[in-house]
Amino acid sequence: MSWDQLTDELDDFEEYLHKFLVSGQPLIQESIIELANAGGKRIRPLLVIITAQFGDYKKEKVWPVAAAIELLHMATLVHDDIIDSSNLRRGIKTVQSRCGKDIAVFTGDYLFSLTFNILSEHTINKHLGLVSKVIKLICEEEIKQYQDRYNVELTYKDYFKRVENKTAILFETSCTLGAELGKIRQSNQDNLARYGRYLGMAFQVTDDLLDFTESIAKLGKPGANDFTQGVYTLPILYVLKETKCAAQLEELLEAPISNKEAIEKIIKDTSALDYTSEVAKNYIQQAKAELNSMPSDYNRERLLFLANQVLERNF
Amino acid sequence: MSWDQLTDELDDFEEYLHKFLVSGQPLIQESIIELANAGGKRIRPLLVIITAQFGDYKKEKVWPVAAAIELLHMATLVHDDIIDSSNLRRGIKTVQSRCGKDIAVFTGDYLFSLTFNILSEHTINKHLGLVSKVIKLICEEEIKQYQDRYNVELTYKDYFKRVENKTAILFETSCTLGAELGKIRQSNQDNLARYGRYLGMAFQVTDDLLDFTESIAKLGKPGANDFTQGVYTLPILYVLKETKCAAQLEELLEAPISNKEAIEKIIKDTSALDYTSEVAKNYIQQAKAELNSMPSDYNRERLLFLANQVLERNF
Image 1 (tube, rainbow over the protein chains, first blue to last red):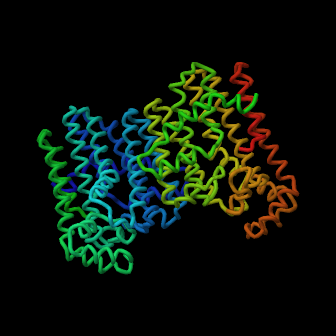
Image 2 (cartoon, helix red, strand yellow):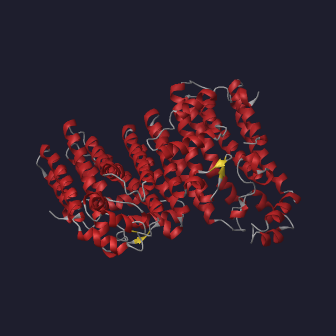
Image 3 (cartoon, each protein chain N blue to C red):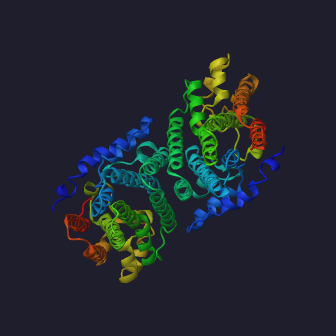
């Protein structure tokens, strides 16, 4: 299987998604179209669509929900870039760096309103409730992350809770929504929900790994950005907790921008990146294990492929 | 009738509203409780409740919607203060001035998610659709207002459209939701929706009047703030379009902060404030006229009182 095969169906979806990217306000319309065009692999809508296909798949019911999930994800990106003061996202300038934080606030809000508009027209209240709960968790976690900046005492537990709430729950919810829309039996719905959660954990841990290993050109955003803003991810925590370089790193982190290269060197010279990579692989194993109970059909094959891609991804 | 009589019922509502102001994130919880405690007359929930009482009033159906509308309003205030860079709201420091724009973004998002959470549990999809459309309009208008800053060519039409989208539509929707929940007949639902819209227009025009006439102590936010940020409201537009002081004002507006007193003097010396006040009164007349078709009962009396209060308000 290849990405092209996997996302074959998504060509039409892209066009479908764009139908929602309209606004009477030219600046909003321009911002959201540019954000959509800048790419992204549409993993979350893909999860909604594939999981629904295990059951009674009705495109007209599933696609609106898949689109709403992607719009919600875009909304969180726009607001996330405000809090991170990021200048690049998917290789293009962020809304906040192009138009200012003020415009970015309302562009994100607009995307939230589109999300709920679509959901209110196309699905049941229970699903709206699920989605609004995801937003609650993301907001709470973003603020916790902000407060936890520069905290060298951050625990692994704090970190994994962050990964779960910021990223994994939306993956899980995408699978839950698809599985519910496909009306597949409850035990399999539970398998898919957990698959989504583990996949999301692996996705975010890999993201935190790539933050160190990839260059700006490949990721479309600046590399090794997080620790310069005081956001400590797994490689940093590993060095602080498990290695003899802990004290040295702690000192360097007091001036993370001027010490950027020295910090990166420590991360690379210790086994921090191997460890992080192992953690991501473990989550992928857990994700795949959940698929053992699913019918061994083309959908299962696609989800297995997707799981492998998360580790190798450059998206 | 007095405010106390009108809002008698709202004592319990206040307690009810506070039940929703919870978060696992202490900083969010603190921010939203402080915002709620800082006051506000709860006009929008009051509109939901009173309009529902014209019909088949079920408190357990109406109050959640009334609370959701107030939370939505609070969300827009938090995000609005970011775009305005306001430091005070209802006499207390705004979330963005206390905690920074970053925290304010997610506090507002959290309030949006609470809004949709409540609505998804307690009302039908149609109502969720109405509410998400209101947010869309508010976002579009906020960005338009931002783009229109320092534009001395702004038309009355632009201004009234802004007032409609930023404020009046949420008043209208509050009435629509109440009237629908009360299952009152369609023609009366239409009357109440228009009553809400006109009331909202009067409310915002009065707000723009008070921005000039009231002191910081009384309003709980700095007076005459709008034009210093390039946001031109009706009194400014009136002078620019109708008076001999137009050229002089235009020149002064090029440095609005240092010319603040001179600008205020022009506004006060011309008939700009009288004109603005007349416009607000006209909207109130229109709002009241819509009530002619409603049964002349206690509810109608309350809505008439509310309309009069909007003109005299110091809230």
